[in-house]
Amino acid sequence: MLVRRLRLANLRSRRSLEVELGRGLTVLAGPNGAGKTTVLEAAALVLQGSLLRPGTVRDLINRSEDFLRVEIDLEEAGVTVTAAAAFSREGERRLTATGALLQDSSRWRDTMPVRTFVPDDLRLIKGSPRRRREYLDALAGRCDPAHPGTLRRYEEALAQRNMLLRTVRAAGEGQFAPWEKILAQTGLAVSRARAATLASFVTCFQQTHADLTGDPVDSLRLVYRTNVADLDEEGYEERLAQTRGADQQRTYTHVGPHRDDLRLLRRGLDVRDCASQGEQRTAVLALVLAEWQSLCSSPREPLLLLDDVMSELDEDRRRALVALVQRGGQTVITTTDLRYFSPDELQEAVVVELSVDRCGDG
Image (cartoon, rainbow, N blue to C red; front, side, top):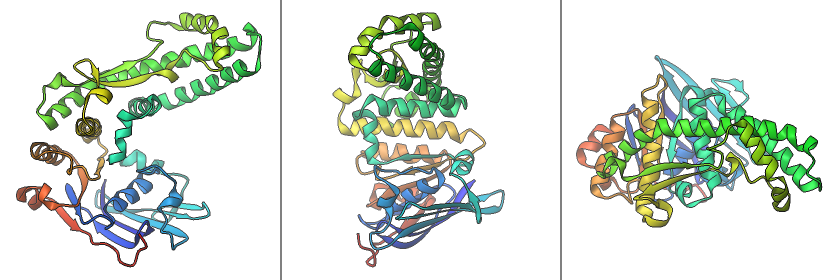
């Protein structure tokens, strides 16, 4: 499946915009405020049902309007399907596939995976462990469709145990044991799924990072840290029983995959502490590209959206990035300067130049 055309109305500063994309690389060029990132936000909103940047859908609606609308023409085997989404300032939404109502964006997520990179994604390295757990769970969910359900059951049992820790002063076996049994079963399943996913992904990530940077393949490591790695179900339940008193003092459960972390290490040091922002940015970009490349080998054709990715890469890494994306499926890169691309690269790409919409309000 390919994105052939995207139309939007009242999204941020753009009152209206129509863009046609190529089958391979499309370069969206223009000054700041021209709507380059807005195009990527529109695609993510419809095809993923999510936002590229922090905020709400209301934040995307042009300040002078009461609604936004996005239509995307998708082509598969010569047939065109239009994915559309409309959102009002009052919170109403309407999602359709060629006019037929949809409950959510799962139809498009299942048939056309989207991978994105925006500058805010540096929070994956700089932010909290929770963000990295969410990233790892998203990876695991794509490998194992049962993982999201297992994780949900774990989180429900965890919430029940934490409630008991806050409200029950005597740590009674009868009240805690049923939830602790569920935590042991689902917690180990979550932890093992994360570890297995990372083990299958790390080689692709390291090779992608090496292709992008020219560094040795093993220059970066992905390390999964969990406090239940040495436990079986019986041992897990015993550990929870042993820590009830201390957990009541803290009012939360200390043992379990909800405290896991994913670390990126270089020479044994955390990239968050020892790498420059440019190196951190390249590491996150390599994660995104590795995911995208793994999807390119599947029957589903993924869409790769890269926002302002060229400005902080040196010349060699720009050439390496373009070479990487040219080997895969459909890609959109935004830029303020076409000189970041070589003449040969621009010759092979579809170049769309945008100007600032003087009718918009910023």
